[in-house]
Every structure is written in structure tokens, then in C-alpha cells.
Length: 296
Image (cartoon, rainbow, N blue to C red):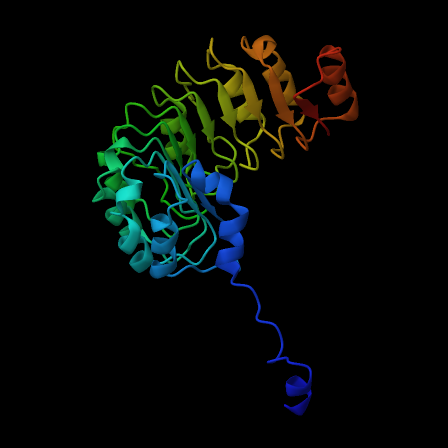
């Protein structure tokens, strides 16, 4: 005490408020209507989020990202109807595991829900049944619902504007994957990490608009590669099948697909092909190696 008094000190300096530090760092984004709070060390309260929204430096929010911040439904409910969110178009709530189905129910009651175009709810504890709330989000173009067991099939309501869908590690079955692969209107579909197993793609049909397909780490075999190769497509431009045991038989089937020559990006890393077959495919690409990868 005498030391502090002698030198005019009142104790150790106060640690800066993490939220204030974040707000200062993000000032430019906030002024552009982007609230991007993604930090494991920040668990904002309702009062703190409301203060960010009511700050004069925060423009009407079009993009709200609250990822990995320990978000609860109580906090979400407290801010969902804030006037500065009325023009919201993008919402990310990823990896807040305590949200559950109630999060979509809260969002579904907000005035901006029907105009939302991008929604990311990976790792939020939302179940397949909870996805029924998406029925009111008819303007969605991008949806990410992975990292959680959604059931063997992803029973999405009719979303006429949906063009991009990610359901990574979502617990899908082969039949559930087949339904999504044939879904009309989808231009990009990412199903990495679903334990589909060999034979899952038998009878597969590809949606006419599908341009990009991700099926990494799905346990697919040579027969699945042959089934995929036999599915006609004029739109397909990107296929990633990394870490599926396709072997030479599967690789031969893929390179014989009618859409193979039109692919712009290819992922065949760790697919079990022989070094000779892998090198032959790599050589066939010639100088067009960018966006293409293959290893045994």
C-alpha cells in the first residue's frame, strides 16, 4: 500500500474489456452492417450484444455471425427483434451446442426470417425435427446444417431458392444422401463425413443444376464410383471424393464418366489407387493441374 501511495499508483492496471477490444477492432465491419463475433473467449450477454447493436457506429445489420461464443437461447431471444436486425440477410450460429431446436423457433418468429438468404447452424444441437422451422425461410439460398445427428435423412421443407447445401457429419444414411443428390435446384452439395458405406450410391441420380459435389470420407467403394459415373450430368464441374477406398476400379469408372472431361476441380486424395493409375490420371490432366489433386 505504502509503495502505491509513494509513487502515485492505485494498483495493477485493469485488463481491457475483451468486448470493447473486439468492438474497436471491428469498427469498420460494424459500420458496414457486419457483426462478426467468433471467439471462444467471448461469451456475450444479452446486455452486451444489445449495446453493440445500439451503438451509433453499428449500421443496420445484414450479416450476423455469432460462432463459438457460448450463445444461449435466452441471449438470442433478447436480440432477435432488435430494429437494427430488420434487414438481416445472413445468420451464422455455428458451434453453440446449447441452442437446440429452440434457436430456430426463435429465429422463425423474427421479422427478418422470411428474407434471410444464408443460414449456418452447424454444431448447434438442432435435430432433424427442428429443421421444420425452415419452412418460413423461403428466400434461403445457402444453408449449412452439419456437425450433429440430423437423422438418416435430412427432411427439409420446400425451399425454392436453395442452391447451396452443406450437411457435413450429419448422420445421413445412403437413402438420405440419394434424396439430396437428386434435389432440384441445388448447385452445390457437401456431404463430407457421413458414414454412407459401400453401395450407398446405387441408383444415384444427380439434380440437373448440380455443379459441385463433396463426398469426402463417406466410406464409398468402387461400386459407388461406378454408380456416380453412370449418372448423367451436363452441369457437374467439381467433384471431391477424398479418402474413400475407390481403388483402381473406382478410378477407372470415374474417368469413363461422360462428365469427367468437363470437371474443373477434382479431389481424389487417398482413394487407394495404385501409383501407376494415379500417375496416369495426373498425367492426363496435362498442364491443367490447378484445382485437381490425386494420391494413392
